[in-house]
Length: 443
Image (cartoon, rainbow, N blue to C red; front, side):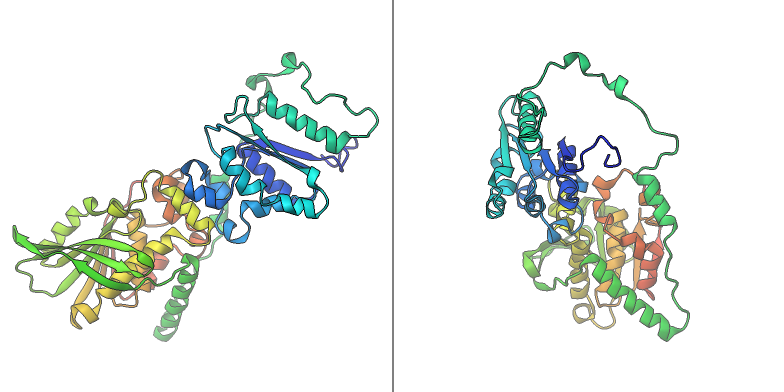
């Protein structure tokens, strides 16, 4: 646009509704060539997103580490001293209602505009007609007036009215406006596949001493990528065990640092004799572990089923993937939290509790639990004898080759994961533990 001779570079404005409003604030905050911004129902602060489900928005609005660097009030402040009109809706049936948006992103920035001597350049409009998620006439005329004041006021030929001129016969249909895209046009999936093809894997050395150093370095990279923080078990509470049907059952709860509580169910065969313990988890929680528990009993192995966050009783309600993106935006990683929780249980179940001769095995069911199990086994600080993966992933590249599953697999969309580790790399990190991928997950 700026290359066109009829365009005045001092009068470039951006406006948009909803996702377009979000693009408006991001573009205008980062690019000062935008001289005036008028986002409409496009964004709100992270605190409101956490407390109001309707305000959480889409994943692009909650990019990894965004809020740890610059939350949306900060992006709004970056508009100053350029003119900005924030438009919201009293009864918005999508998101970001006025009552929450105004104190979140407008009121905190007003003093900045005043201090810069530009209080008139920062305005807020609350739409009442119709008051829903819209960019209808009331909004448009408020935008026209704002443009007139800041772009045309005092100029020769400036408009004398802020109201909308008759234009119904000029509005084109969607079909008339459709221009299409060329064949083979890039999209997010094709871009991801292109980037993935260029990733180089780190091959482990054959020398034992060098391999040990390679593993140690890999674990440190994994900790950094996951934002891993240990969550030690502070206490274990349980109910009195009861026996029946050739087994003994004991319900317990692992109380971890930072207030996390993980429910667990231990099943011990009454004729146990081999001293093994198997830790089990599944994407579906306890209800998805029945077959793995029965297999452990047939092997005369005690089985402890544990549920980490997002699983079973530790589920996060409706749309749990939204919590994954909120956590990532604030600087943490859901996958890292899940790994830290399972690693804490693994560490607690190590030789100090089971006995020096005891051997700990892990069985996981589902693509997310399989990755959690491999990572936790690598970082728990205790030897793991064997890891069985049921319905796991042979490669994380499947998340790109078979896209469209973010809602159910959101922890695996951990920023930078595939650039550093694929499944084979995670398996190498847990050696000498034996790893068996029994069946592939259906995505």
